[in-house]
Length: 138
Image (cartoon, rainbow, N blue to C red; front, side, top):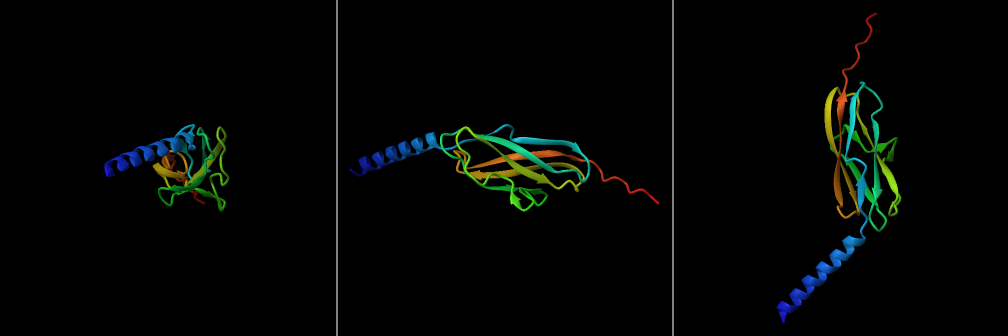
């Protein structure tokens, strides 16, 4: 009898999880890698990741965090991602800002947490900051 109950609970639990996943929101990025290319020292470091909710229920992004202090996800004191739910079929953007006062190549991850089928996903920024210009000698 105990085995039957365990089997039924396992089956029912799997069925409920499968049903939940089928109706869950799902985030799809136009690209999960954003290449800044080669940019000037102290240039505008703000870029956008475009995404669409390809699931069947509203998508809520709970947090977006940079890998280190050089990558900001808060722009002008405001979160760089939508604060309202994204309805199925609708799109949005996540803004990130890289500190362009750091010379050389960079390759950083940004973690997006949401209520999507895959709750945590990493997107990536990369590029190269040109050398700081020499000051004119006077």
